[in-house]
Image 1 (spheres, rainbow, N blue to C red):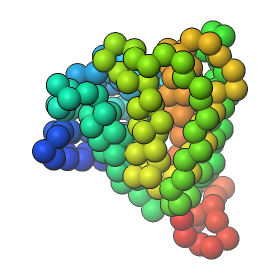
Image 2 (spheres, helix red, strand yellow):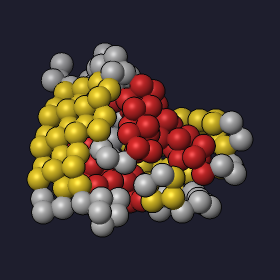
Image 3 (cartoon, helix red, strand yellow):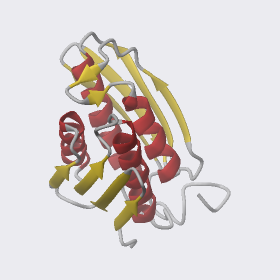
Length: 196
């Protein structure tokens, strides 16, 4: 069985980030990013994925939230990749349809080793607190490319921007949980190539 957990620190001239991630957790989280809405999203990401997640981040928020949000996506993606280990025995694919009041998200994940993002969400509000909503796509891009996963995230319908983004985070957590679940009937990796 793989280790299934990771801890990564990353410091640049713009951010100082430390994240620990456990795939087989209990949904416990300790999140402090300086961006309140992102704290909320990462807390529910942890809960709905059943991941233990600790995020401590200090960023140049006097500029805006861009560097902080993107760099957290980078480090969390790296943590997911490391915790996934050799990816032997995992289901590889996961999909979630997630309703959040009037909004509906569809998220589908392939833990393939081939990073790709398809993001389709018409977010109509520019800011939620100090969270720039256009950074939602940048966060998921950073996450997908650093985790080495293919991620399709789409809002099927919705009106409230908070609800739409929350549905995307919850849906991603649930799809990722399914994809990273170990299945004893899978021998090696779920690929005819023999590697992921």
